Length: 108
Image 1: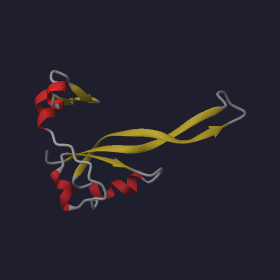
Image 2: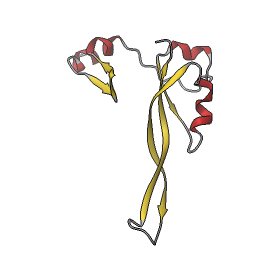
Image 3: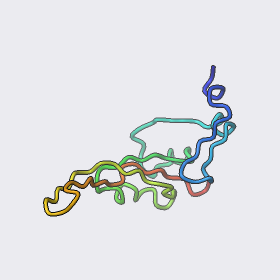
Image 4: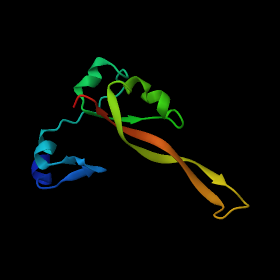
């Protein structure tokens, strides 16, 4: 049984109806997990969407090579650290930063 047969009829939505993936688009999509590509390099133009992982606090710097060619669709926050304030309630606050960005190529 192929992946397309297992998922036929399902609709995948990313934050917005504009990014709904029908079963036909899902079956014709191509997934590539190539790492260490040159940011902003010509090989990036082969992809319509990119998932970019960034280090804490460096998101804006690491996205700079993609500013002209891609648009940020969404960002996924992840754990950064705990903040403890004994004089406030709740005493512990979980701080997060964007860790993963979903980018869409501008000419798609």
